[in-house]
Image (tube, rainbow, N blue to C red; front, side, top):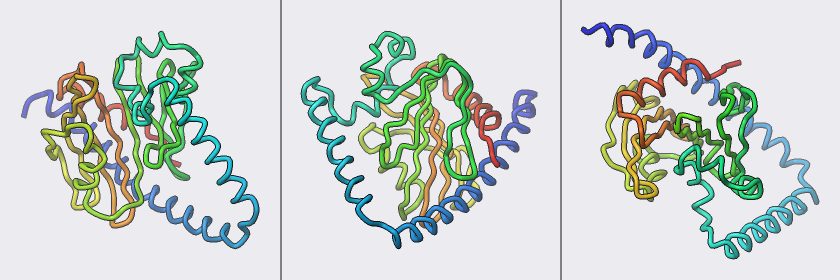
Length: 239
Protein backbone atom coordinates (compact mmCIF):
# COMPACT_ATOMS: atom_id res chain seq x y z
CA UNK A 1 0.00 0.00 0.00
CA UNK A 2 1.39 3.40 -1.00
CA UNK A 3 1.67 6.33 1.40
CA UNK A 4 -1.00 8.15 -0.58
CA UNK A 5 -3.45 5.25 -0.23
CA UNK A 6 -2.73 5.01 3.47
CA UNK A 7 -3.28 8.75 3.98
CA UNK A 8 -6.60 8.64 2.16
CA UNK A 9 -8.08 5.85 4.29
CA UNK A 10 -9.04 8.01 7.30
CA UNK A 11 -10.90 10.35 4.94
CA UNK A 12 -12.79 7.40 3.49
CA UNK A 13 -13.72 6.20 6.97
CA UNK A 14 -14.89 9.64 8.02
CA UNK A 15 -16.95 10.17 4.89
CA UNK A 16 -18.55 6.74 5.06
CA UNK A 17 -19.46 7.22 8.71
CA UNK A 18 -20.85 10.69 8.05
CA UNK A 19 -22.90 9.55 5.06
CA UNK A 20 -24.39 6.56 6.83
CA UNK A 21 -25.36 8.69 9.82
CA UNK A 22 -26.57 11.38 7.44
CA UNK A 23 -28.89 9.03 5.63
CA UNK A 24 -30.31 7.59 8.84
CA UNK A 25 -31.04 11.08 10.15
CA UNK A 26 -32.47 12.27 6.86
CA UNK A 27 -34.83 9.29 6.81
CA UNK A 28 -35.93 10.28 10.32
CA UNK A 29 -36.51 13.84 9.12
CA UNK A 30 -38.37 12.54 6.06
CA UNK A 31 -40.76 10.48 8.15
CA UNK A 32 -41.30 13.42 10.52
CA UNK A 33 -42.07 15.59 7.52
CA UNK A 34 -44.62 13.10 6.19
CA UNK A 35 -46.31 12.86 9.60
CA UNK A 36 -46.42 16.65 9.79
CA UNK A 37 -47.95 16.77 6.31
CA UNK A 38 -50.67 14.35 7.38
CA UNK A 39 -51.51 16.54 10.34
CA UNK A 40 -51.66 19.62 8.15
CA UNK A 41 -54.14 18.01 5.74
CA UNK A 42 -56.75 18.07 8.49
CA UNK A 43 -56.65 21.88 8.49
CA UNK A 44 -56.27 22.63 4.77
CA UNK A 45 -58.72 25.29 3.54
CA UNK A 46 -58.68 28.33 1.29
CA UNK A 47 -54.93 28.75 1.88
CA UNK A 48 -54.26 25.78 -0.40
CA UNK A 49 -56.30 27.28 -3.19
CA UNK A 50 -54.50 30.61 -2.79
CA UNK A 51 -51.10 28.87 -2.88
CA UNK A 52 -52.06 26.89 -5.98
CA UNK A 53 -53.17 30.08 -7.74
CA UNK A 54 -49.91 31.83 -6.80
CA UNK A 55 -47.87 28.90 -8.11
CA UNK A 56 -49.77 28.90 -11.41
CA UNK A 57 -49.22 32.65 -11.76
CA UNK A 58 -45.50 32.25 -11.07
CA UNK A 59 -45.21 29.43 -13.60
CA UNK A 60 -47.03 31.45 -16.26
CA UNK A 61 -44.79 34.48 -15.57
CA UNK A 62 -41.65 32.37 -15.85
CA UNK A 63 -42.88 30.65 -19.03
CA UNK A 64 -43.53 34.03 -20.62
CA UNK A 65 -40.07 35.23 -19.62
CA UNK A 66 -38.53 32.06 -21.04
CA UNK A 67 -40.36 32.52 -24.32
CA UNK A 68 -39.32 36.18 -24.56
CA UNK A 69 -35.65 35.48 -23.86
CA UNK A 70 -35.37 32.18 -25.71
CA UNK A 71 -34.28 30.35 -22.57
CA UNK A 72 -35.56 26.78 -22.23
CA UNK A 73 -36.90 25.65 -18.87
CA UNK A 74 -34.17 23.04 -18.52
CA UNK A 75 -31.45 25.65 -18.97
CA UNK A 76 -32.23 27.22 -15.60
CA UNK A 77 -30.86 24.17 -13.80
CA UNK A 78 -27.85 23.98 -16.14
CA UNK A 79 -26.34 27.41 -15.53
CA UNK A 80 -23.66 25.89 -13.29
CA UNK A 81 -22.24 24.04 -16.28
CA UNK A 82 -20.87 27.40 -17.39
CA UNK A 83 -17.63 28.55 -15.77
CA UNK A 84 -17.53 30.33 -12.43
CA UNK A 85 -16.14 33.52 -13.96
CA UNK A 86 -18.98 33.57 -16.50
CA UNK A 87 -21.44 33.80 -13.58
CA UNK A 88 -19.60 36.94 -12.42
CA UNK A 89 -20.35 38.59 -15.77
CA UNK A 90 -24.12 38.15 -15.93
CA UNK A 91 -26.50 40.85 -14.73
CA UNK A 92 -28.32 40.91 -11.40
CA UNK A 93 -31.64 40.35 -13.17
CA UNK A 94 -30.19 37.24 -14.83
CA UNK A 95 -28.93 36.01 -11.46
CA UNK A 96 -32.43 36.43 -10.04
CA UNK A 97 -33.88 34.55 -12.99
CA UNK A 98 -31.46 31.68 -12.44
CA UNK A 99 -32.11 31.80 -8.67
CA UNK A 100 -28.41 32.18 -7.90
CA UNK A 101 -26.69 34.32 -5.30
CA UNK A 102 -22.99 34.82 -4.58
CA UNK A 103 -22.22 34.16 -0.93
CA UNK A 104 -20.33 36.81 1.02
CA UNK A 105 -19.79 34.41 3.94
CA UNK A 106 -19.94 30.70 4.71
CA UNK A 107 -23.58 29.62 4.80
CA UNK A 108 -25.38 26.52 6.05
CA UNK A 109 -28.14 25.20 3.79
CA UNK A 110 -30.75 22.74 5.00
CA UNK A 111 -30.92 19.32 3.39
CA UNK A 112 -33.49 18.12 5.89
CA UNK A 113 -34.54 18.64 9.51
CA UNK A 114 -31.43 16.89 10.75
CA UNK A 115 -28.66 17.91 8.36
CA UNK A 116 -27.11 20.96 6.77
CA UNK A 117 -24.55 21.45 4.02
CA UNK A 118 -22.00 24.25 4.23
CA UNK A 119 -21.57 26.43 1.15
CA UNK A 120 -18.32 28.37 1.44
CA UNK A 121 -17.78 32.11 1.02
CA UNK A 122 -17.37 33.16 -2.60
CA UNK A 123 -19.42 30.26 -3.98
CA UNK A 124 -22.62 30.68 -5.95
CA UNK A 125 -25.71 29.06 -4.42
CA UNK A 126 -28.73 28.09 -6.49
CA UNK A 127 -32.19 27.06 -5.37
CA UNK A 128 -34.64 26.75 -8.26
CA UNK A 129 -37.34 25.06 -6.15
CA UNK A 130 -37.15 22.17 -8.57
CA UNK A 131 -39.05 19.03 -7.62
CA UNK A 132 -35.85 17.03 -7.07
CA UNK A 133 -32.99 19.54 -6.88
CA UNK A 134 -32.66 20.67 -3.28
CA UNK A 135 -29.92 23.16 -4.15
CA UNK A 136 -26.67 23.51 -6.08
CA UNK A 137 -23.30 25.12 -5.36
CA UNK A 138 -20.64 26.44 -7.76
CA UNK A 139 -17.24 27.01 -6.13
CA UNK A 140 -14.58 29.48 -7.32
CA UNK A 141 -12.54 26.42 -8.34
CA UNK A 142 -15.27 25.53 -10.89
CA UNK A 143 -16.52 22.57 -8.86
CA UNK A 144 -20.27 22.08 -9.25
CA UNK A 145 -22.19 20.38 -6.42
CA UNK A 146 -25.79 19.20 -6.86
CA UNK A 147 -27.97 17.73 -4.12
CA UNK A 148 -31.04 15.86 -5.34
CA UNK A 149 -33.67 14.13 -3.21
CA UNK A 150 -36.36 11.89 -4.66
CA UNK A 151 -39.34 10.15 -3.12
CA UNK A 152 -39.31 7.17 -5.43
CA UNK A 153 -38.96 3.42 -5.67
CA UNK A 154 -36.35 1.45 -7.61
CA UNK A 155 -32.62 0.91 -7.26
CA UNK A 156 -30.04 3.62 -6.68
CA UNK A 157 -28.46 2.97 -10.08
CA UNK A 158 -31.73 3.07 -12.02
CA UNK A 159 -32.87 6.27 -10.36
CA UNK A 160 -29.50 7.92 -10.91
CA UNK A 161 -29.54 6.89 -14.58
CA UNK A 162 -33.04 8.38 -14.91
CA UNK A 163 -31.88 11.60 -13.28
CA UNK A 164 -29.01 11.87 -15.79
CA UNK A 165 -30.83 10.45 -18.81
CA UNK A 166 -30.53 13.70 -20.79
CA UNK A 167 -26.86 14.16 -19.93
CA UNK A 168 -25.31 11.37 -22.03
CA UNK A 169 -24.30 9.48 -18.88
CA UNK A 170 -21.35 7.12 -19.37
CA UNK A 171 -18.59 5.31 -17.46
CA UNK A 172 -20.81 4.75 -14.41
CA UNK A 173 -18.77 2.67 -11.94
CA UNK A 174 -19.03 1.81 -8.26
CA UNK A 175 -16.14 3.26 -6.28
CA UNK A 176 -17.33 1.81 -2.99
CA UNK A 177 -20.57 0.09 -2.05
CA UNK A 178 -22.19 -0.73 1.26
CA UNK A 179 -25.17 -3.00 0.60
CA UNK A 180 -28.20 -1.60 -1.23
CA UNK A 181 -28.49 1.63 0.73
CA UNK A 182 -25.22 3.46 0.08
CA UNK A 183 -22.59 3.71 -2.62
CA UNK A 184 -20.04 6.10 -4.04
CA UNK A 185 -19.91 6.15 -7.85
CA UNK A 186 -17.86 7.77 -10.60
CA UNK A 187 -19.29 8.75 -13.98
CA UNK A 188 -19.08 11.11 -16.94
CA UNK A 189 -21.68 13.33 -18.62
CA UNK A 190 -21.69 15.77 -21.55
CA UNK A 191 -22.87 19.34 -21.07
CA UNK A 192 -22.32 22.49 -23.13
CA UNK A 193 -20.20 20.50 -25.60
CA UNK A 194 -17.83 19.55 -22.80
CA UNK A 195 -17.23 16.36 -20.82
CA UNK A 196 -17.76 16.61 -17.07
CA UNK A 197 -16.42 13.99 -14.70
CA UNK A 198 -18.51 13.17 -11.67
CA UNK A 199 -18.31 11.63 -8.22
CA UNK A 200 -21.64 11.03 -6.48
CA UNK A 201 -22.71 9.73 -3.10
CA UNK A 202 -25.94 7.74 -3.63
CA UNK A 203 -28.07 6.87 -0.61
CA UNK A 204 -31.55 5.43 -0.42
CA UNK A 205 -34.09 2.84 0.56
CA UNK A 206 -37.31 1.61 -1.03
CA UNK A 207 -39.05 5.00 -0.73
CA UNK A 208 -36.43 7.75 -0.62
CA UNK A 209 -33.23 8.58 -2.47
CA UNK A 210 -30.57 11.23 -1.83
CA UNK A 211 -27.80 12.03 -4.33
CA UNK A 212 -24.85 14.35 -3.62
CA UNK A 213 -23.01 14.95 -6.90
CA UNK A 214 -19.65 16.63 -7.53
CA UNK A 215 -18.88 17.48 -11.16
CA UNK A 216 -16.01 19.20 -12.98
CA UNK A 217 -14.72 19.51 -16.54
CA UNK A 218 -11.27 20.52 -15.30
CA UNK A 219 -10.27 18.08 -12.56
CA UNK A 220 -9.04 14.55 -13.16
CA UNK A 221 -11.14 11.73 -11.71
CA UNK A 222 -8.61 11.21 -8.91
CA UNK A 223 -8.52 14.92 -8.02
CA UNK A 224 -12.30 15.16 -8.15
CA UNK A 225 -12.67 12.13 -5.90
CA UNK A 226 -10.30 13.60 -3.34
CA UNK A 227 -12.04 16.98 -3.35
CA UNK A 228 -15.49 15.40 -3.07
CA UNK A 229 -14.48 13.28 -0.09
CA UNK A 230 -12.78 16.18 1.65
CA UNK A 231 -15.73 18.50 1.02
CA UNK A 232 -18.24 16.02 2.45
CA UNK A 233 -16.12 15.24 5.49
CA UNK A 234 -15.63 18.95 6.23
CA UNK A 235 -18.98 20.50 5.31
CA UNK A 236 -21.76 18.07 6.17
CA UNK A 237 -23.21 19.30 9.45
CA UNK A 238 -25.37 16.85 11.41
CA UNK A 239 -27.50 17.95 14.35
